[in-house]
Length: 468
Image 1: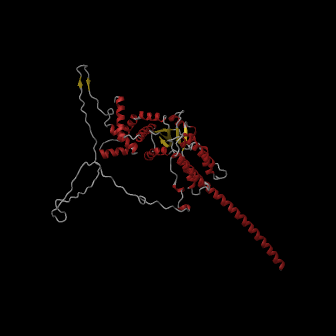
Image 2: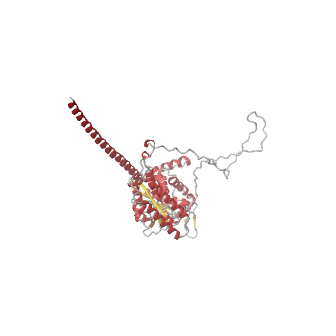
Image 3: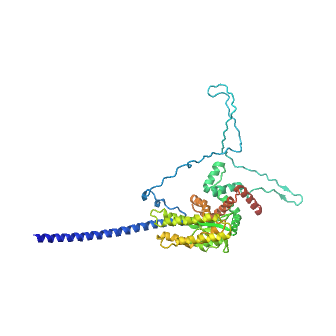
């Protein structure tokens, strides 16, 4: 009995040990599969991030808000900013008008409460009101009186001033349409509606389109002058964004100098557009982002610090940031801030050369520190900083060069707003006309020239040359 009992006990003990071993093996398999699932989830998040970045780069689209940290990520939601002005802000009100066009005196002949006689007070209250007065279209009738020359026998008539051929509307009308279209970004049908409702102009969409084409024709030579002037710029910025023309992808470029802004639409995004505008022998400085095709562009380069810092910041703000991303972001931010502060104190070219070399060496030492950067995305940014280390500090060497390409980014914003409102262009000619007018208007704005004053003078000059 005891022998049989001991055999049963031993057998059960072995079965328990085998089951424990199997459970341990299964737990290891589960842990292994959990690890694989976790890696796959991280890879999926990385691919989603890449998709958002590619959409933003290719089509100028903002990344989706779904991937950003919030209540679903388990992170604490930051307190929202206070609405309205900050504490301690002193409010301001509209200034009193310097000009008064109409004065109205208000007084009571008798007390409105009891009908008694009133004794006028010495104090007079003042209140100003500004109003928009509907202005009808000004219709000008020219009586053109001809004459017969008794000397040469010719019949002559005086020319009608400030007119564009046989068109019914004048120069100011054309400039106003250009303003509504390219500054206020109104679609052509909305422009016609505004003119008809406000001025009772009785114009059609076709009339609006016709006058906008005429405006582009008149300012075409000014556009070519701006394009030629860009080659002479000592410092320029350029950038591009996506654009659709007749259902096909195009690239909208902008080039900026101190005195001019140029827009042009091209099929190509590479350096050949830069060569077309600046020339192969350009020896100035151009500020640009890290698009690889720009590397072979002519001239000296200043790479955009804002793009590098923003890429590093996006890694830090990811749902699951790489462990070394914060150190990298803080490190390059300190280097950038130090370079900007040092630049303000430099007086001579020798000082600039010395400080430039110091910061290039400092950046290279930081990004090549052995074993510090482990995540592949951080390594990518470190390699980018190392590759362009000398071109990131050109702003120290050459006065007037900005360390970021924000100027070109801001110049593209009006065109991006137009793209969102208008949609695509139906013809290549339509895109070219928009380039001409936006280049002209933005250059006038940069030179602090009034569109209606300077534009009128320019058009009158062009019409006199053409004999219209």
